[in-house]
Length: 265
Image (tube, rainbow, N blue to C red; front, side, top):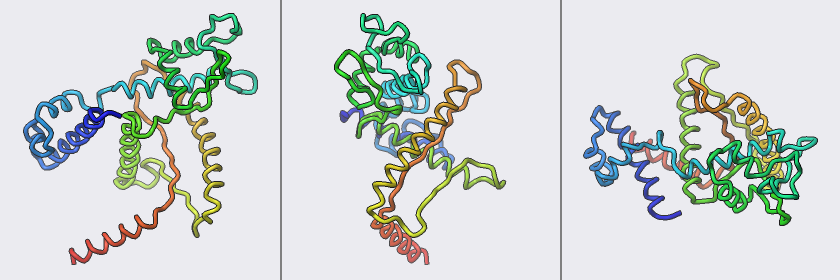
């Protein structure tokens, strides 16, 4: 990831937070006020305000969403799923002499789910990140139903911000609920007395397998009801994660709370 890309992501975050804090304090979030507060140049602040993250679809977002749509189609569309639900291996184009007449190629798959998107560039990215494997005989195999951007890429940073925002917002909604049974579902399952460290790899394998099955079921349910062009839609979904408590962090947090309590006392 280049420095300009990283800098742009940070500027968006600074401008967004400064705007919210100024408005919460009853002050007008002007370009000059935000620039003074964040030390971001007025010109860059103006660009961020005119094209905020919430309404801007970046190239990274487009690529991530395109890959996700193609993978879902490859795993659920009857044109690309064979007997017993097995995902078919595909040629890049179905026009070759090797092609089965009943199976369209990867380029047709992209044309169906991401019209206008360059299928060659998409295939290169999916192969590079391990979502797709080049079998070496002109065919490609889907290795994963989900796309995870590489570490420290623009996509991964944006995804990190979205995941944290969505999770914190769910907690905020539940903290503010006044009627029991309302709010949003949020569950945590943990070992009451801890898990033997040598069992951690087995637990990781177990939740990856069961979690993927659960995610696939939810994805199928949503795919049947999500169509382009529908009016009055809302962006919604689920998220789940595996955590391992860091004892050092827990200790530092406890000390910080104790010190803060002493200061207030």
